[in-house]
Image (tube, rainbow, N blue to C red; front, side, top):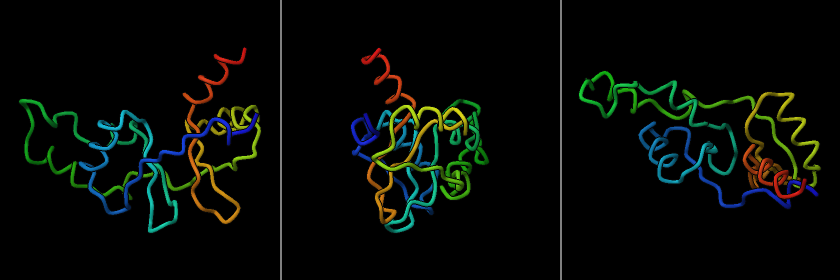
Length: 135
């Protein structure tokens, strides 16, 4: 089987200049762990829920919150995104993708078409779901 068989096509994206409050909202409401960062139609980065956790004050939305804590939500997406993207194509074998993700210590692979356009994403959860149903 290939990544095209298991990739997610419903993609959640943000723009480079979106504030982290938008990133936080999309991650929380979408129930997802990765957001694709776009500059127009071009994929330029990825933000994980862990990236957001490191960038936002732990005091936001608590009784101890101060103005400086709220300001962390105004940082822009491009300031915390991963820029060094490792991508795949829909015809890559699932086993190859799993090994690549382990080797590179990444938790998702954006799937690009032949022209570099974004087609989907495969996450470690997609791989676990596949291997659990195909022992």
